[in-house]
Length: 243
Ligand SMILES: Nc1ncnc2c1ncn2[C@@H]1O[C@H](COP(=O)(O)OP(=O)(O)O)[C@@H](O)[C@H]1O
Ligand SMILES: [Mg+2]
Image (cartoon, rainbow, N blue to C red; front, side):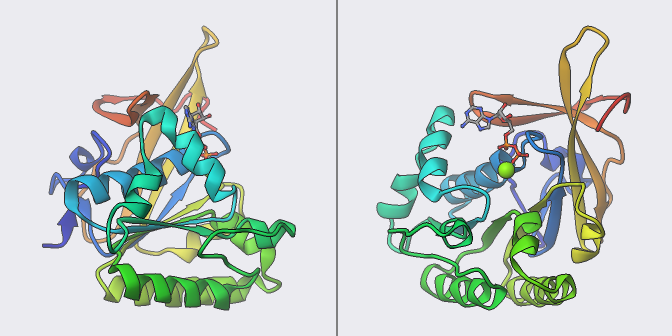
């Protein structure tokens, strides 16, 4: 099988297979507040809960403890997945503290370099057999390494290693990062929002690229509800002022 159930309602329907590509490295881009972090966490949590796929979330943009508490508003119990399963169904990696010079009590921490990311990921993969990984965000990771071409090379290496192990990887990125599309040649999902004349905002998702798959190729509406992201595959939206 080269597909999985993504765990994001409506998302799998955007593909002719009615399931989500497996073992690929997929870039998830969008402006701040477009839903990238929620998407990444939901992909991991539902993969763990409904498909028994262990996940790894590498957080460069926020403290893991903030993510644990924030995600409770969706009734997502991260701590339980971390602590009540052996091996854990979810592992959070702190890429934030070292970057801003904070000390941390997290089990897994990334020093501000890419070698450290690859080492930590390899260690957790061995321990947990993770098959879903989310790196949040590539934009921030890029700011901590000196040479952007090195990031590109290492990300491709990492994608190859993870893909080889059947791991599906979501790399989040702000759209504004120049040339970031080059990082992933396998798949590109875009999140955005649009202001209506009424002043209301509407969210949209586009499968811009997915190598090897037939997929919808128009913006579809999605909402962030109390249960997380829900995509409406039947609601095509015109781009309007999508950012
Ligand atoms: N813990 C939460 N509880 C309720 N709503 C949330 C929570 N986290 C995010 N959201 C909603 O989802 C939106 C997108 O958040 P987020 O995924 O953090 O965006 P991004 O990572 O793209 O900057 C937020 O602006 C908010 O409306
Ligand atoms: Mg985010």
